[in-house]
Image (cartoon, rainbow, N blue to C red; front, side, top):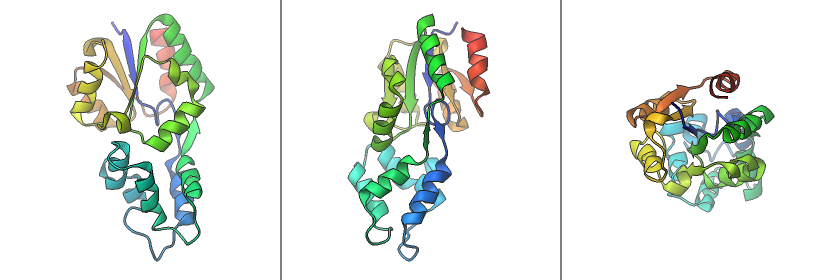
Length: 205
């Protein structure tokens, strides 16, 4: 029996188009000054990106992150332009997903968020997705200083909530994270498109 839900954010609840940010930041850079961070692998390479790993676990500040990118940008490019480019990937939350979260809460499910995220994206997300304030708990990697698929990430959530792993459904779009969730004893759902929204409505509501 499922009593609690643990959602990833980007790629599950919030729609992403990472290429938009890559294109926007690439347009700001000076090709003669580019370092290995300002590439699709270096800047946004998931678990292989040293810069992003540091930023999403809160081990460098937002200013450090922006200054690293600015060093590869053309003269005259501002922090504000880099921030706007960094936000370009965030497309928001579909109304049907917002409605689903409301319905799940009304049904009595405990809902938590576990996201690999960074300070700038947290600020944007909390401003543009206010439904998240109604969740039972928000676990952001930059605040807990742990990022998926580190097993300690899942242990942290379990230690700071009353949820039982065998009664909790964890929803993520990345297989390494799903596998780590299984190791923590969670029920898991690896989603690869938005069909999960209608399927979850059918199965849990």
